[in-house]
Length: 329
Image (cartoon, rainbow, N blue to C red; front, top):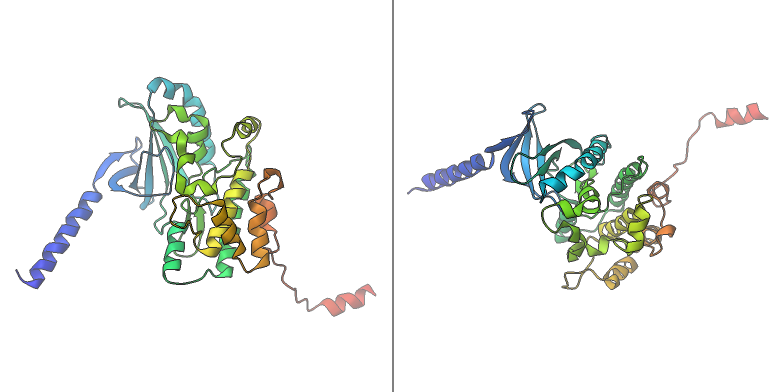
């Protein structure tokens, strides 16, 4: 076999593989969304059985087809009204820094009931992946980029927390924050708490143990998951858990990686060491205010947007100032 024949044979194999992945497995009831065979990773989202690439035939863009399996049809039916209510509220979430939630529908045709929902496809990867690449290339984090990212994430959180009722993310990590090629930041997994906190017992699989994922334990506020916190949630959602997670994300963004020293769990000592390594006193103050142990002492997302490390009032050059002064005299 000649070299050209080998190359042709190899490219043919790739084409066959590509065609196999683009095979249409299923369509939405309306026919707009077409599920493909190729699966995608959109962050650590407990409860999501599969996340596949799909095509929006109206807009001609790729989207993500998410599926959540329910263990019992009767239990599914008992939660159906609540599910519809919460999914409808997610349909109204519209912010440039939040992964778009397009559509959902319920399916009980098979032996096991399921929820299917369509979300925006973030092809550029997660913030975690970007930070790893940056560190691998022996680069340090640019302060201006860090500020832009913080501002965009806080803008999204402030929007969610100001909804009525407030929407708490509950799974904010560098894996669920995505960065596009143009630098635009978007947070995904906004629907996380819908499955984990509202009716985890109804979902197929052990999604109620999502906090046991050791690699992401350090993002969870100390009060998250305790009985007192669950009781408070019955009255109103506690947004401070998102602020704690955001603080860990900002620290990770600044140092590129919080060293776990070979362990699967990032310890409190590792977080403290990373915080102490920050040279900019304003960045250090900013991150530490977010991860205070007392949830009541953490600032809000809106407050953080006006922190002096992010909010800069530029000097204004007013050509008419001398004239205004003369008129006032």
